[in-house]
Image 1 (tube, rainbow, N blue to C red):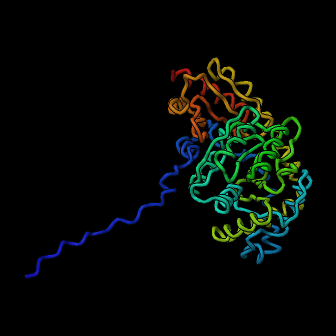
Image 2 (tube, rainbow, N blue to C red):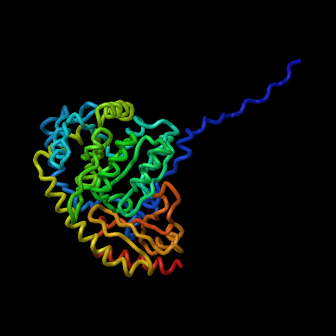
Image 3 (cartoon, rainbow, N blue to C red):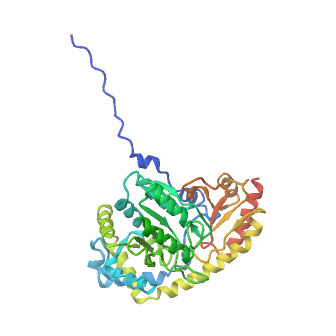
Amino acid sequence: MTLPSAPAPASASVPPLALRARATGGSPVRDILAVTARPEVINFAGGLPAPELFDREGVAAAFRHVLEETPGRALQYATTEGEPALRELLARRTAARGLPTDADDLLVTTGSQQALSLLATALLDPGDTVLVEDPCYLAALQVFGLAGARVVAVPGDADGPDPEALADLVVRERPKLLYTVPTFQNPTGRTLPAERRAALASVAARHGLWIVEDDPYGELRYEGERVPWIAAHPDAGDRTVLLGSFSKVMAPGLRLGWLRAPAELRRACAVAKQAADLHTPTVNQLAAARYLAVSDLDAHVARVAAVYRERRDAMLAGLPRALPEGSVWNRPEGGMFLWARLPETYDTGALLPRVVQEDVAYVPGAPFHAGPPDRSTLRLCFVTQTPEEIGEGLRRLGRGLRGAV
């Protein structure tokens, strides 16, 4: 006698997502932007350049030229390392700013965000330790989390990571790298002084450590003197990766960035890029090269910085009336962001929904921390709105904060 077999399940479950994908959340900034996309919202949450300041005619002319003069090349596959003309022009700009660089020292990437992902692939094994600033750029925390790294915050002060604390952590944790945005940092807007940069480079040299120096905002200086890159320090030349980007000085939609790294690491990143996307879009690279060759990018950046300075000043002027008594904030010398700390009884994450009801938004500071969060902090982006809109937005912010406590 044959026993009836159990009915087969209609559909078996698919295997689960990778642990790193399950453990790494989305970007709180992106989530906030989705909630505050209504046109009536004055949005201090995004890190978006002002679109009305893009050099639309110059960029359009560059695209027209490459599509009319070299369409076959512009629309074709290209080398992984990047278009030679663009790399040569980038090398000249880098060398002119005090860091001798050849075209072969550079790898063009699809935004500097991809450069971070390539470095994580090339340098990190699951379980490796990464040291970061506290607070830290959110998308860097995402990259390191997806790589399976253990992320440890370096204690610091208003001048950035503390060199003695860094040295202690390197000895104790044996990390692969330190990640830093030393100029007009996201989220705080702070700039590491030259002495602090030299001290960090010295620690890296003594103890054996990669430094990833991310510089997307450095050209947006409004006042003060330019501080040389960590990569230009003699102690750091063989162990610093410098990341750059056109997103804040030309247009983020081009998705063009680059990394400058020692040869072995650069080759490893190129192999990782071959697996990721083969190469950055050829037409975008050639258009950027054409723009650099025939337009004055430095003059364009100076015009943008002048407008951004006015907007920063408008925000600084309105903050005393908008934020509760006892709040403190910084005065960034450039970049896009301002960092504020409210009295410790305030939780800016819990308060955000109430503030959004006033049609204004910011980013709570807690997600930027790899260690214990400071829930009384917030990040404000001041470059996307006009001074008049900033004034109105701060009035709304003040109403929201007063009505929420």
